[in-house]
Length: 461
Image (cartoon, rainbow, N blue to C red; front, top):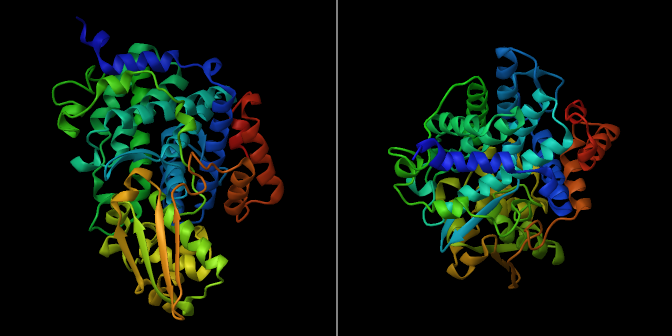
């Protein structure tokens, strides 16, 4: 049998070619608009960050054909470079959506809206319609979640790789879809991208302080995925059995443990309806505990000087990942948004956990540092099945004992943010850099995306 015809990449390429706007429900179409607005909130909010400034500067210096806009500027660069710059900004705030599964204490997932910048960049290059972009976003979420579901018995993180290592396949297929590649070319794009799109998980590992490289984990892989699609368009070929072949992805990255049937099977629930969006700018599995802290502080009007101690109970994965001692006293944004010690303290001091809680002065604030010393983080295996759940116990100096448990924080797919709340989130970041009229134009453009004849009408804002 022809290996190209039988390969997993060929089957995913066929799925990509068959994926259509007309098959999407009204709920999915609306959900695609919501995740796009959410991504733009994250990216625009990171415009003045060191990450955003540095990556945009380098991409601008590289020059090249003016294809796609870097968000927050009028500067156009080659589409693969725009995807890297915009993806880095979308990731920076750690305010982006999530999808993952839990298998006991183990986590399998990714932040799917990190895939949207590559879709926008290639879409702008191709003068794609709004419907084309909606389809590509829905496809990206579908493919990403399939890849996660197939790895339910073992995650790439357990093998030392970052979740973005699976994303080159997704970007290659979605970019190829927008470029109009044939089934054979789409499979080749997957092969080309998969050989090169691996990321070491030291950027998100326990015992290691974080740094700016975390922000380009997926965006740099996306850049590779786009280049793979462009090469395939010209006739460049890749390994047909990149997923299942000898020394391929499953064997090398996952040690042979992967469920190809789950990867290829029809999904029981549309991917866009299974994502979780954040109402707090912090690591996703801390959302339950942090919302619990905020509720107690506001309800009882607690001040930092009232606090005797705080105990946070979280899932095993959350306690290990964000209760790691190396993250106790963060000195940068990338570490702080993954530190339950810092996040708990800043929630008590500021009564909010948003982009404004990560300025350098907050990391050295004596009140914050004093509170960090009063915070303990413990794993509670009873919470492991809830993914985002957390329990906050606050003891006050007057002898009070306060407890709050939240299993499904605001933004969870079972407790979703409303459109109005998402708009407020967007305005909360965007209005730092845009005027009200510009902000409203973007919001209207996103919610009217299916009416756009050219996605450039959105990126021009």
